[in-house]
Length: 199
Image 1 (cartoon, helix red, strand yellow):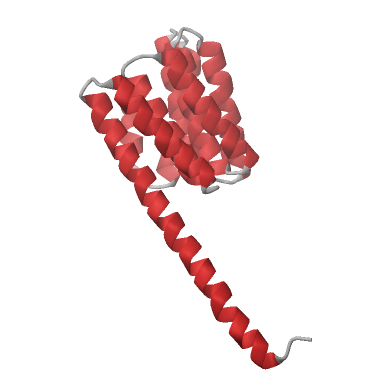
Image 2 (spheres, rainbow, N blue to C red):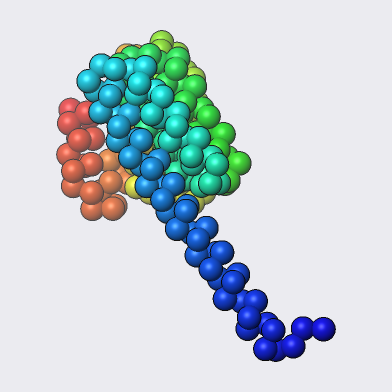
C-alpha cells in the first residue's frame, strides 16, 4: 500500500529523471545542428568526404533521440549539399529517405517540400515525367491541407519543368495557376516571378 506521503517522495525523483532526459535530448539536438553546420562548411570548401561523415553523424543522433523532424532536416540538408555538387543519384537517395521518415510520421508539410525537391532532381536527371509526377502528388497533398502558399510554389515548379522541356501551353497553364494563388495570398514577390515566367 502506498500512502500519499510516499507518493510525494516518488514524484520528485521521476521529475528529475524526466528533466535529465530533456537536457540530454537538448544537448544532442545542439550537437546534431552543429554537425549540420560543419557538414555544410566542409561541403562548400570541397571536402565532401568529411562533410558526408558530419551529415551522417547528425542523422544518426536525430534517429537515436527519435526526433523525426530533425532527422528529415538532416537528411534534406545532406541531399541539398550533394545536389549542389551535382551528384544527383546520391541526392535523390537522401531526399527519398527523408520522405520515408515524413510518411512514417505523417508530416504532410515536410512531405510536400521533399516531393518538390525530388521532382526537381528527377527533372535534372533527365526524367521530367517522374519529376512532374512527384510535384503533382505534392500539390494534391497541399490541396488537402489547404496550403495555398505551397500549392503556388509547387505549380511554379511544374511550370519550370514544362517550360524547360518545351511544353509552352502546359507551362503557361501552370504559371497562371501559381500566379492566381500568389495573387490571392498577396504574395507580390511570387506574382512578379510568375509574371516574368509567363512573359
